[in-house]
Amino acid sequence: MTRPPRTIAALIRHGDYHQLPDTPSAHQPFPLSELGRRQSRAAGERLGSLLQGEGWHLAEEVDASELLRAWQTAAYLCDGLVATTRHLRIASFMALAERGLGTAANLSAEQIHQVVAADPRCGELPEDWKSSPHFCLPLPGAESLTMAGERVARHLETRMQALAEEVSRDTVKLFVGHGAAFRHAAHHLGVLAAEDIPRLSMYHAAPVLVERLTDGRWQRIAGHWKVRQRDEGHVD
Image (cartoon, rainbow, N blue to C red; front, side, top):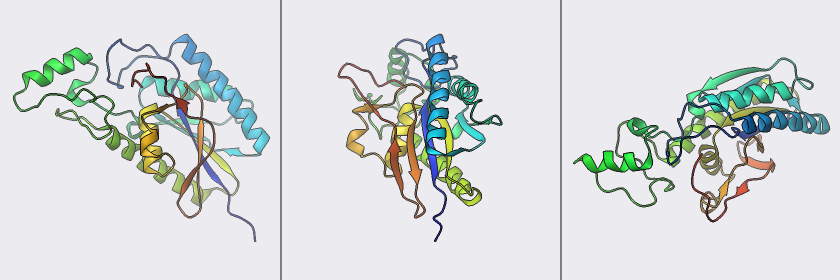
């Protein structure tokens, strides 16, 4: 009996970018740095070699977060993959964005504390509010890390289920987004234990490959999470 084709999602954190200091919002609108551009091009070349070595087909549509650094990472990845797959296109989705801080977006950490303290409807922020998975800022439009992970996981599940219904050979689909949202999505999909999320991060523009099995389960098959250093902050 012929086995069904494998469907594999490559989760790729954007490359290094120009980030405001002491600003926890991951919805910053800034582009990749030169380092980030190099990281992204190199990642495309490495992915091309992996695809050829494994005999995997690459889905022609690349899903990227709408934030500029993710879209640019996808574009440079496509440049690096041109020798392998010439007809790639990028589709942008806010569903792949990092955790949103709502009306506090792009304020500094100190400004966020001031805003919350000035609102009589809000309590005091916990010390670990930026990294606590279930804490959501008491401000309109804000999300918790868990909420963002569930949103990304829904997108991955929907897109990969659709891919499984249309492909006839082993296929990899690229998803370019953000580290924390991908890690929490991986937990929601059963790939990463909850206790491992705080100690892990993702390397810039380095894919973690997770396969969606025919029974709907997911498993990591390649790529490495980055072990967070003791003094490393929780930033995207």
